[in-house]
Image 1 (cartoon, helix red, strand yellow):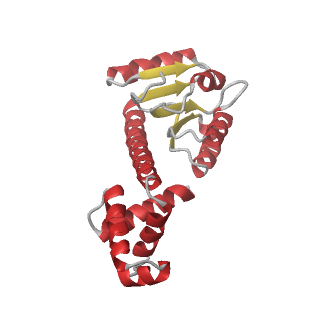
Image 2 (cartoon, one colour; image 1 turned 180 degrees about the vertical axis):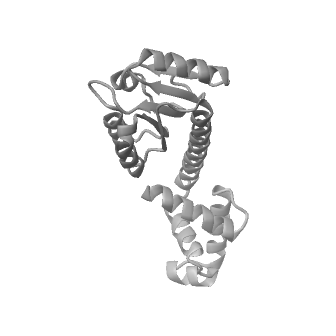
Image 3 (cartoon, one colour; image 1 turned 90 degrees about the vertical axis):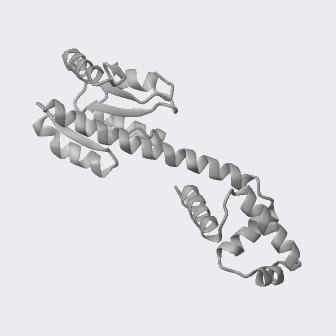
Length: 207
C-alpha cells in the first residue's frame, strides 16, 4: 500500500476491531490497510502514502501516542484520528495539541467515525496539493539565474525598474529583460501573482 491511492490505514492490536473497521470502510468504498501493531505500520510506511491513519491509543510494545511521535519525527503527513477509551481522552487532547487531526471515543457511532475520516481525507488532500504546489514552485525558482533572483527580489519589494537598474548597476533595458524572463519562468502574468508566488516560496522554505 505504498502508492498514491488514498487509503485508510487502521492500526489496532484488536483483530475484531480491525475486521469491523474494514467491513465498515470498504462498505463505504474506501481502500483499507490494517496493521496489528505500530511496528507493523512503521515497517510498511513509505513517504508517498496517501490517506489517513486511524490509530488506537492503547497498544502493547508501542502505543499509538508513541507511534504518533515517531511519525512526527519522520515528517509523515498522514492525518491521524486516535481511537480512545474514556480514560484516554486527556492523552488524546494532548496529541491534538501536538498535531494529531482528531480523536473518537469507544464505543463510537459508525457515522461519526466516517464523518471524521472524510474530514481527515479532505485535510490530507489539501496538504498534498500544497506539497505539489511547493515542489512546482521550487522547481521554477531553481531555473532562475542569480541575477534573475536578485531582480525578482527587488520587483517583489516594490522597486521600480529604474531603481533596480541603479541598485544593480545595469541598464533599464537589461532589468526589463530579466523581469520578463522571471515572469516567464515563474509562470505568472502579473506583479500580484509574482508577489503571491514569492510569498509561497518563502513560506515553503521556512516550513
